[in-house]
Image (cartoon, rainbow, N blue to C red; front, top):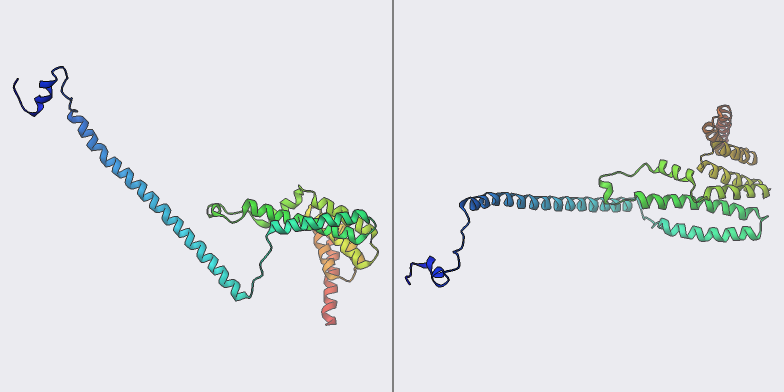
Length: 259
């Protein structure tokens, strides 16, 4: 047995084993060509990660500056009272409404009880609209890209649908109050509750009819006449609208002269 060097040692002891096959030179060249692509892909991932971190940091700084500006503005205006969260206010309103309904059921001839039911139904409708808006379109990170809808139009559409039946029940309760009330000031309030419920439902004619009852109970109230003029205009009753507006403006002029 002759020793022919390092490459023949394995072949001498294991004659049946073939020597290890070396990869062709083209394979090595291909691997060398792929490495720059891998390095560029890795650099691109790092750049994207860095850009994302910069954007997040910038948005955080903007939110902090906005909050600080709000705090400074609030201090300049004076002490700010903490508002009750809408879901909590809604829960309180529903509790009061349940009590008012029970009271009206026990005393169906009590006009004030029905007026309270109507008022609380109107408040519940408003709070439901507020909670729904905050839930669907409240401030969060998504609004960096998509602005929420116009709040006034969204509220009007939500109230007009009246999915919870609040405004329909408010209308019924206000009518019960109108039928039972004899004192002019309270009768006027009942008519105004009815007008508010019908306005929320988008029924301008019924709103105008209710306001006409209110001005009959309080004919010297200029604001009521002007509100009636607006309702008549939305209902297409333009002659009545102009007459009501003229009456309201005349009352306002009289008040100015009396001062």
